[in-house]
Image (cartoon, rainbow, N blue to C red; front, side):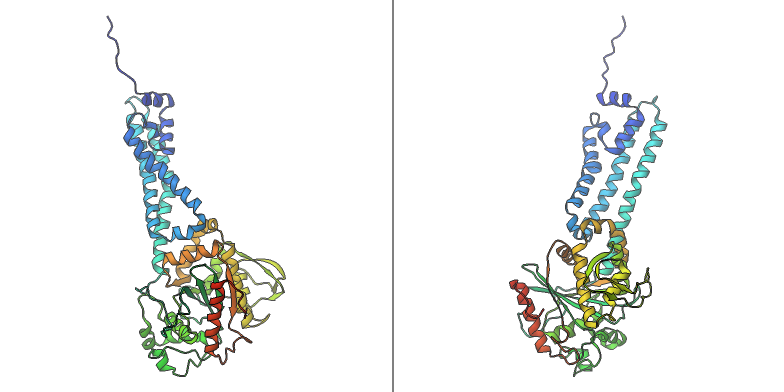
Length: 446
């Protein structure tokens, strides 16, 4: 009597036999752990979690928080998590493919399945390796760009016990026309960005490059050198400090640029306003940032003559731009910010504030996400800031998410005489400006 076969067939094995080795391997590459779900439940659940659920969840988080994407990509914990997810994405598929192939009987055609699995893992590993490499690069950029003073204290405080700046965060934006990696520049652009921390309302104040007699805090090296005030234009303070090592050494503060510290202390003391941080932008690279963001669009009321082309410009300036709507690449935007032939230095200051406002309002989170690889390389040699990565990203996200720049003003005639400034009047004006954005009322001098 023939002996009855009492062996049972695992439903998963039956499914694999029916699907064939190639189908099972493809299933392992798409959803690791799924082909062995009925055979090795614990292993399958772990592989599905690590290789499928978590990566999908990461993508969903990035999409949902795309308007806060700067905060994510400049968060070192997020970058480490992203690298971990990328590694697990590949490892889970590798383990799942090996498990599927080893589960086949000896007589099954393993060679084709092995070749398909190897090819699939390599193809899927390429974007994962790219992601890890980009995350490592970005970590390096964070270290290069976001330099620290080693203290949470403001960059430059008034020192007179004044509480007029209480509740505000003020950031000094500096820019000059220099080449890659060169920071001994004349700061032709100096803008104070003051933010009411409770409401998020923002004001921008342009400081003329030709402001004379900037004062320095008593006892400082620059005050000892120039007790009657700086005898040159304000934009020459930065290169003066850079060229005098004995003075520069007295402004060393952690890894911050001592020249920026000296300039911030002069502005803070002269205008009686606390400056919390600075952002230093190499304006020669500013055009690269705008190009990386996809350009910017402004509506010009009048025709504007363009200046001579700067070194490194990618396109030639037209003789004029405007009137009407103008979509600008980085080179054109830099010309818009630099031109003086159409009006004056003071008109140029207003256009710089207009340009910054337009960039802040037009850049989308998805734009930053798609273009961030290029942006990070540009930022490495274009930007230095005392803001932490978190503070910087919070500022960028706040600007893009709709926090309005409520007031914009230049310290220019007839409001101020830069050649012989009355710093008490300037201090009172800045106090009034902060009150106006705090109380959300019109600034009388705009």
